[in-house]
Length: 72
Image (cartoon, rainbow, N blue to C red; front, side, top):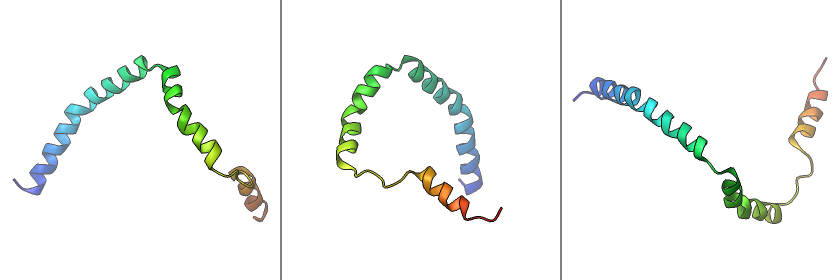
């Protein structure tokens, strides 16, 4: 099989599969237990708070500083 035919087959496969994957995604979102998801992430969040040093400033403060230097 040549490269062009491989590409056509790949495109057909995704055209057929995309709606099925979208339905799976929508079903998983509908069935998601938000509280359980947050509980699952709690340890990682708490670790990040303990382990990462605070930033000296936010990105917005830095952006404002840079924008103030631009000519008006």
